[in-house]
Image (cartoon, rainbow, N blue to C red):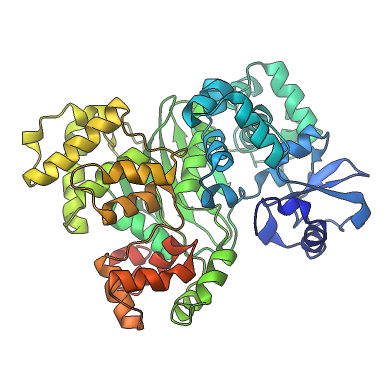
Length: 494
């Protein structure tokens, strides 16, 4: 599946007629007779092919005057996997729009982050998605508004501003235009007792994903490496604190068979879209597991691993800079030792937060706070100390920027130029922080051991040559190889 799938009419019609949920988020079906747009898996009787037209984004459907279907709710389908597997300008722009940058800094802010002119960005987004950055951000605001209307008892005025609208009138007009219902009509359609509990700032949501999803290594990794005070596993949920643009939050994520249950506590509701976007990214929920697994199955030695537990995701992060710091703390030490180092930093330099459920105490320290600490207080070898202080100083002063919009190759080159950064550290950051689906760790001890057991080459150069056939999904191959070991990262905590 490649860019512009919506232009392959025959393939789109087949997907709609078979109600294939794998394509939800890849394209949207607009029905010319009813002026409604749907996801491919919509449960209603498919329209005649001549009445269907296809768009690459919900925003493009809305701009063309189509309203969201009330049955299949196309605005709630998983995001397109393209933005996670590509590193070009459009993909980086989409990741930033998902992170709420247009609402906070406008289109000029988006352009500055990407290093292009606003005209270039608008032209490329229009060409590929049929909508510019403002329309894409507006579609996201409408989706956030619907979420708040349906899951909280908040007054509409509060919802309007929390969703990023500049006025209540714009909020009312947009909701009516996109959903063909007023905000109060949307809420009235809910079954009695369906709006969320009236606990201030607490929201319960469902995060959709493309099946299959294997939660074992995903949640196992997050729980086994959890930094005390910042993260914990409790009652079947991974919980952590979040540093957000307007305030902070605490999230609890629980794997369910057909969704991830997400409970968010936010100090400022305007952070909702960003918090959701970052949690989806951390759990790799917009991946296309069928495409990934089909490619990896072509290797006869990997195929049994994929068949045994399909749908593995790459455990990622909600904060790229935090992950880079933790990768350095984890160099050449055990998982337990890395957690201990990180926990000391959190206690000494993290910002305290109040967790109503107890257990979580701090936000992970900011790069600025870490850059200001006395290096002599760090209980680590002098060379590692240099690596740590150089990294946090460059993150704090902006010399090095790691974010959703990072150009993967450029970020790799910058990281490799830092003292103490070898290929393993750089590729772990590329895989888990930057989200490169093709990052690979041929020198990793666990990978070499798994390769040897499976009969794959264990020499890094030979393994890299063999892994060329796994591209562009080598980061997922890493998860399958790691999972052959009995390390706690591979198992859901009991």
